Length: 355
Ligand SMILES: [Zn+2]
Image (cartoon, protein in one colour):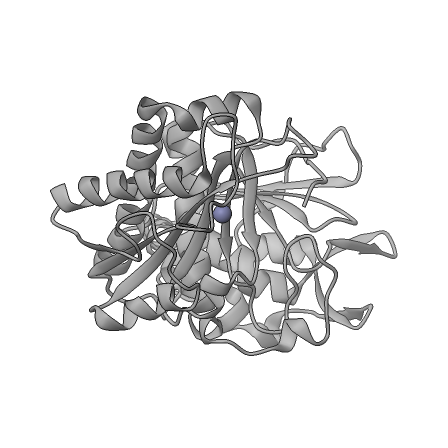
């Protein structure tokens, strides 16, 4: 299709800066919606077209549907909540479904996940960031998980100390929820943010799955939007609707999680477990943009070894710092954050069925 050069420039600016809110918020009435299982759904091809994508090469597994355009890619697997958005795994609130031979995506997922992931520049609540509050998970009597070599609480503090040093060299103000090996109450950690100007909150943890030593890779968590379920759990009419401080900043927290995940995957090459949603206490009690990173698995033999290596922790810390700087550049300078493929990482291609 031929398009005039001014239209093309506009489209490029649109894609780069997300100058106009994505269709979910600017033209909701334009979506052709239908209720399936009491959830509002949109035909998937309509959604893809709104993000300038068309059907891509068919996948081997017929349940998988791929869409691509000049700037974006989407692969979903019908009947699941798993989605690969711009090359990186995400977990939707509701499954992509088929009805009468057509595929549908929930409007909630367009608004809360697909839209903000593809057009982070359109999220108006993202405001200036001046302070980074880093939270080393666990501490004191709470040792967290353990590997063959050490405890989670010690590794989280070491990574946070490293991230702080890297950011301070770039003249970024950083504070920590704990400076040494003691326990800080889970609600006090995010409460610290109220003492500082324009903060964001980043909690550092390491994962454990003693029952499955092969489990490995990186997860980044944000709070689910009010009324929507957490990753891996069925919708819960009571828990999903329980209000908390974190609800107000959920869109910005999601963009922070998405930005961090792309950077960590691109820079470290770790396995992509996806951007997930959970109601961790530190996220629930936080009224500024907040995320929790599960850096790697203490219980995986190779990753347990990696985590114990100073060189690995330094490299991972540099990646966390770069993810924070990428979000600050978006918040402070309207500069779109890099995607994993900007670091020459191949798109995630396999569905894992593991939430
Ligand atoms: Zn932990």
